[in-house]
Structure formats: structure tokens, C-alpha cells
Length: 284
Image (cartoon, rainbow, N blue to C red):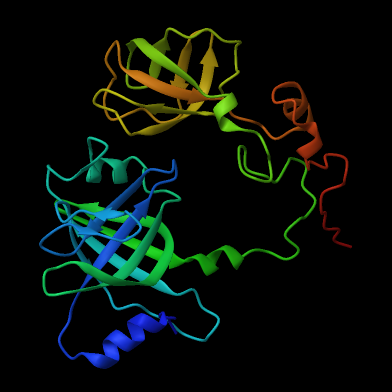
């Protein structure tokens, strides 16, 4: 059941002729927000949010809501061409390179007057995007309700040899902004990136590198090995970046107490329990 404010209820009760459209709001993991209207003109809401009609085409399933103990879900299919971009990068390329991982999608129903001005907005669904599939001109997004976050083991805190928290999240407490650096490619192959940065051997291992400019702009890569001023990617990129391309890079963590203390000065947040024996099975 969706709650509507009193003014919307009165409006719907008092008219039989009205217009409506779907609004889509996509929030990527880095906080970038993109808004689209499934309508023939832009839609601007009273709070200042602008939903553009100039973007990919949207087609969705009916929303599945149930009182049973299942995760409500929504499938959204985007029709994309070479002009449909986010921050200058083609949407299909972003999806192929994991740009929709941990992203959120919100679906709104907008009620309009005869001139196409937004009157009321009702939030229909918000969820996390999972495993987008696409090819050609079609990109299919599976969106699971935020209730999926409750699908965790109980108790949530168990004993592990290494810290169970994800680096840079709220439980870890390390501020990503204090550790990421911007660099420039000096030379590169698809797997080895030489840069203008200088750092201790191994400092960026298990970390990440995101390109800001060039053919790989908008793509993110895991770092397998780092040495002096070069990075070896875990999986080679689709193409070799060019000299002068810029990127941001941030270190990783092996989640041991020593690394947490010495590398990030964050030992008070570490929850590793390396001295608790692991589970064993004895067969008699």
C-alpha cells in the first residue's frame, strides 16, 4: 500500500481527466544522480528536481508487492543509443564496466495538468540495481526493494579471523576522501598503468582505480599489485589508456589488525578476531 497526501486524494476523487507519467531517478554508488521522465517534455518538480525527457527509453514490469516474506522487485528495460550518456560516458559502457553496481533506482508516478506541469508526485518503488544485462540497444535492470538489506545472517556480528566490515563504509569509519589521490597516466598497457604518483610498494593492492578522462572514463578497476609508480590491474581493461588520461586511485585493505592500525590508523574500529579458533569437525 502506498501513502498519498490528502491533496492528491482529493484531486483524484474530484476529476476523471488527468495526465500522468513515470519518473526515474538513478543514483550511482559515487553519489551521481540522473533523472529521466517517460514523457515528451522535461518535468520539473516543486523541490527543484528536473527529470529530462531526452534520454533512454524506459519500459517496466508492473510492480510486484506482497505481504509474504519475499523481496519485492521491479524489472526496468532501457532502450539506449550512442547519444544516451551519463557524465559523457555511454550508458551501456557504464553498465559493462560495473558502473551500476550498488546503484539505486527510484520510480515515481507524476500527475500533470493539461499543460504538462507537475501537480503531485507519488513514490512507487525504490530499490537497489542488481546484475544488469544488456546487449545491442537494450539494457535490463533488476531492481530489488531496499528490504533486501534485511536479508542477512543472524546475529549480524560473528567472529572472523579478519575484519567483517567493508573498507570506507560507515562501520569501518575510514574516510575515502582522505586517501584517494588523483593521478595522470604516463604510459600504459591494458593491464599495467604507469603514473606520475609515487608510493610505497604494495600500498594500493586490493584497492581501486577509476578513470576520469579518456576512452576508459567512468570505468573502475581493482588493483592486483602496486609498485613505486605503477599499478597492475586485476583484470585487464578493454583498451589501454593514453598518456595524459587522469584517474583517481585509493588503497585497499587486507582487513588484518596490523593493516588497520598501521595503514589507516583505524584500529579502534577493527573487528578482526584472529585468535578465536575456526570451526572444526571431528569424525570419530
